[in-house]
Amino acid sequence: MRISVSSDMDEPVARALLAELERRGHEVIPYGALRAGDDPQWAACSEAAAREVADGRADQAVVCCWTGTGASIAANKVPGVRAALCTDAYSADGARRWNDANVLALSLRLTSEPLLKEILDAWFAAEPSDDAEDRENVARVGRLDADRAAG
Image 1 (tube, rainbow, N blue to C red):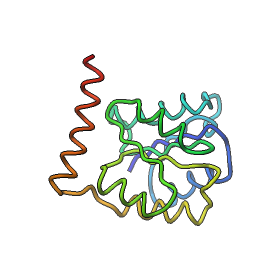
Image 2: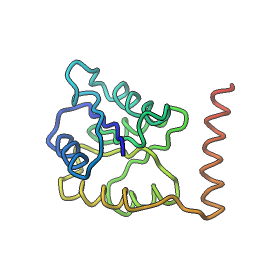
Image 3: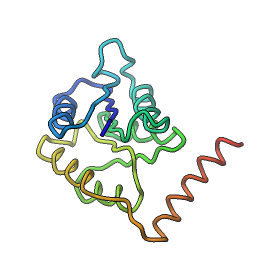
Image 4: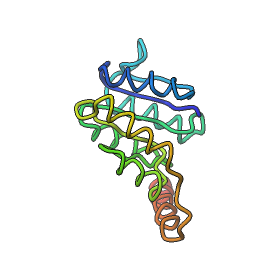
C-alpha cells in the first residue's frame, strides 16, 4: 500500500511511524518535518499528505501534530478525505469500519511506540462495513464534500 505521512515535528514517534510502516511493507511518502525542505506547518503538511489520498496517488495517509487535532482538521478540509483522530486501537478499528476513514490522525504527544503499533494493527486489520446504514453515512459525507465544491 502507498501511504503518505506528514508531521509538523521530527519527533521520535513520527520516525517510528515511518519505520513501522516500511517494516510492514508499505511505500511511504513523507511530508513536513519528515522531508528536508518541505513546509513543516501542520496545516500545510497535513493538507499535502491528504491530497495524495484525494488525488489517488496514495491509498491512505497518516497525519501527525502535537495533539493530532490540527492535522485532522486540515486533512478533513480536502474533499474526499475522511480523517480520524485515533488515540487507541478501538477508535482506529471503528474509524475504518464504520466511517471508512482513509486518513489516520495521530497525536505526537500521546502516542507511544507500543500504542502506535496497536493503533496500526487495528487500522490495517479493519475493513469498511457493508452495513447499509454505515454506507449511507459515508455517502452523506461524500455529498457534503460535493456540496462544498459546488457552492
